[in-house]
Structures are given as C-alpha cells and as structure tokens.
Image (cartoon, rainbow, N blue to C red; front, side):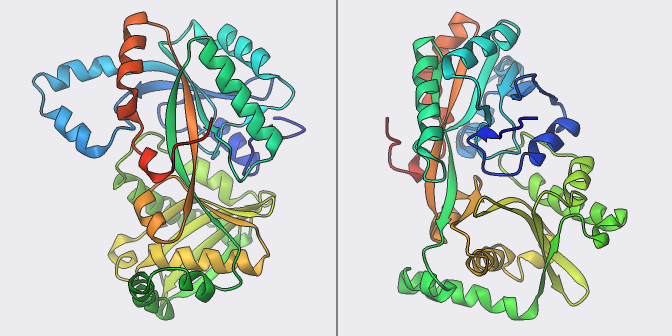
Length: 356
C-alpha cells in the first residue's frame, strides 16, 4: 500500500486494501509493486448502457448468441471501492502509461483506466492536473476516452437542513417535508466501525443481506461485494467508518456506511429492508440525516456516490464527472468502440459538458 497516499484519493486506503483481500465475485485483484490497484474480470460492454437500450438490444435476432462476443477479458486500473482512480503519486503520467502497457496492455482484450476525475471540485489542482495530463498522453497513444458516471456532491455551505430546503422550489420543499415526517417514527444511531456490537457475526450477516437486497434491484450488476469484504470494513476500527442505522421499534429498517475523511462525509454502501424502507421513505430520510451529520462535524462536502442521479438531482446534489480511458487490442473492435462509445455514456446528461 502507498505510504504517501494516492493521487485522487477521497476515502481511506483501507477500502482498497479490503478490495484486494476480499475481491468481488469473478474479480482477480492485486496491488502492484507501485501501489496501483488492478483487477481483471470478464466485462460485458453493455454494463453501462441505459436499461432501455439494453432491453431493445435483447429483442434483436440472435441476441443470446452474439452477446457473448461483447463480454471480454479486461484489465481495469483502479478499484470499485474508490470514487476515483487512485494512482501512484510518485509516477508521472507518461511513466505510468508505460508501466500499464508492459504489465497489462498486451495480455487482455481491453485495458481500462477507470474513473479519472475531470476538474473535480473535491481534489487539489495538482491532482486534477495529473488526470488532465494522463488523459492527454493516453489519447495520444490511441486510448479511447469515454465519459464516465456522475458523482453526486452536496457542498455544505448551509448551517441547517431548513436553510438547504429553502433553496428548493416550493413544491419540491413540500414534497420532501411530507416524506421526512416518517423520521419521527425511527430511531437513528451512528455506530463507529470496530465497535464491540459489530463483533456479532449474525448481525453482520443481516447487514450484508440488506446490502444484497439493494444490489439485486440495481440496474447495473458489476461488482458483487462479498460478506467477508463487509466484515473487514465493519470490524476495522481505524478506518473512520460510520454505520448509520435506522430502527423501527426493535427492527432494523436499513443502514448506510459512510467514511469521514479529509473533511468530507463519503457515502459508500447502503442496505434496506424494502418492506419497511419504502414505508418510511428511508432513502430521503437518510439523505438529510447525513447532511445534518456533516453540518454537526463541520465538514466541507457530502459525497453521495454514483447511483440514482435523477433522485439525487432532485435532492439538491450537483455533479462532477469522470472519464474512462479504454485501450482495445483488436483493431476492428477498437473502431466499433470508438464509433458507439456515446451509448456507454448514460450519465452524461447530469452535468454540463466537462471541460478540457
């Protein structure tokens, strides 16, 4: 693991360590000698297209047969447990690309440097400049640049959630206040990862089942994290992990696992008992609980993750984008990916065109 941190790091390095120790299903993960997280897997090119397009393609003649040709042996530079690609600080972009070419480029159908930030307000000028130079150097070497997902962020430039709500339209405000009434029926607690209560394996198993419920109803199924991964995080007392738990009487309704790091609250994982979570509008309640926690702790931002951009936009989030750099070994496939890449950019509408 890197001793002096990574470029683009928004969360504790322990999440990358846990990713390597307990890889998602079907992933082969390693931390290279230069500290770079790398994983290989069979990657379906349709993973990130909009659900409506996937459904249309599924109706094409022979779809089950030819779809297998879109699932390729892929080497990813990065980790699915970090918001951005965490890169070794001691290697300049040109040297990093040479290292990737020597260690990954000729061994896999695809090489993808994932989640490079574009002028992110969450990073230093030096980190943003590193990504800009890496993208420019990679494109000059034939990498295809694909727009990434929309990372939701709420700057904590208000002193109360009432002040935050006052910035919204009257109808949106009224709708949210109605949803938030259910909070009065819930008991909310914040548990620090590593506390004695989390040593109970039965309770950790319940939390994992709640995570699985959310994963199974998601539109994108890519990295299925393991129970061992969650055990590692929940038992890590040094990670600054905060487990927000929501109870109705003696029944757990849901949770979200956040990390307080470098003046931010970074929301990483959620889990719901949907039979209760929908009744209590838990998605909306937890959003405002997280904002209140960030205010109380004097934090600068609430980083709310990649999923559900429509809902998060309605909740007052702004968005910052990433790009993926894709190296395609086969020339014919390279041309096809270049031509159809806009179909892989489903979140692009949630931000103005990224600069640069």
